[in-house]
Length: 116
Length: 116
Image 1 (tube, rainbow over the protein chains, first blue to last red):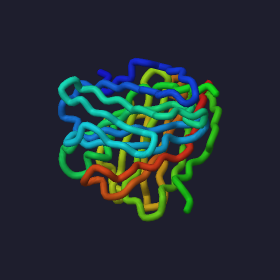
Image 2: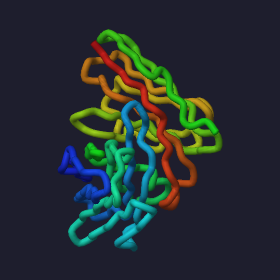
Image 3: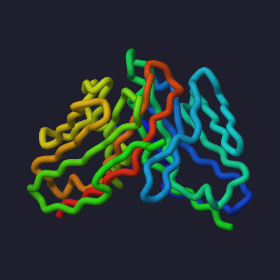
């Protein structure tokens, strides 16, 4: 059962435009969400996160929106740059006590290509 | 500052052989994770340790897989005997203080395993 889903395997965007990556989850216990970026032949790197007590978190060109009622989050990149081309993973976790926030559940990833 | 170090980066082995993947976490981190990435299942958590003690191994696919952390600076993931369906990228990651959300999990560059 895929608890975190990224239904778009790929996204192609023109440089300077907005990139919107989407993620849906099914487990209502998730209360912390993260986005990771991964370049080829490298490990995933943390990008931005959001707690369920918020509906928006912004960091420079990156903004994550959370819609708890829809169990949906999205990552907006504005403006998109060719260097943003990578695989983006959505991840979620929840507080089951102790160290549970370390147990991240990842989506399948979305390949973002930003064309010059 | 060195990141998470994994070895080997690439391994090709024959079915039935034993495979050992190695990881050195970031110094000072007390959590260590083993993830596996495949096309079919994306990024899956296999097992994680806290202070060298396995906390959750529910993601380990079967008894052919085993993981150890003999000290704070070293961990192994062993597959014996290996099968072609074990072909994947195996990531080691580390972090600290995961009792609350917000601390980042840092990934190594991965070990690419091919079992023929």
